[in-house]
Image 1 (tube, rainbow, N blue to C red):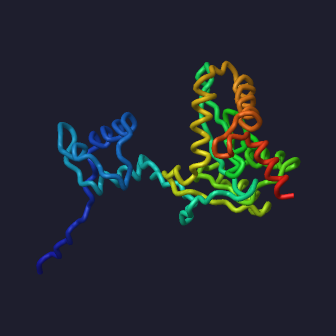
Image 2 (spheres, rainbow, N blue to C red):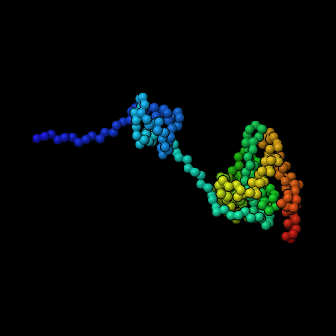
Image 3 (cartoon, one colour):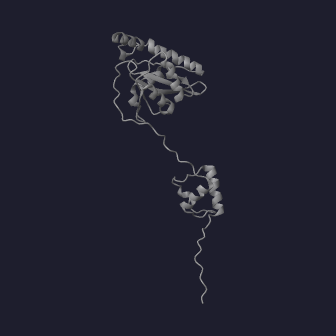
Length: 252
């Protein structure tokens, strides 16, 4: 009687210890590719003290040692079908809103909230600070609404300040229509983009701001001059405040 032959043993071949240590060292030093990312072929070729290993085993090693990096997911953007930016027919019918960045003499960066009334070309209010979020924008507009009316619609890009829950909830509560331009197409918000160019050319590029308070004072002075003194060719060479006053008299 012949003895029973044992079945084949399927014992997994362990990855060479020296190779494992080498991969761990390189991952910690150079941040190798994460699982799901194409791995460099040079990492898989045999070399001294490192045998050739299949990519699947390398991925298992990454997972077991916690070397995998999270994949960068694209930020969700609010997109709407583009509509032609027709001229506004009355004050506060539509505002265009954006941000402009600059820096102090110390190198510290700050931002300026720019708002343009598309009919009167006035700059109703602003914020100048190093950090401006959606809550800060809502707070400033709420303060402005105590003395002046808010617009019926606001045109902006897909910045996090304008797509935050605080700003979206505030606009819905106030009954303000939000119109988001397509990503990468600032020409769809042409009114405020043209205004940003004038602000940078005539104010930001011609002044050296030593402190944040200095920047606030200079920009506020330029805003007052823009609204009350400077004539605009699109408004029959009149300042925005004078043009708005004439419109109110005509409407009355």
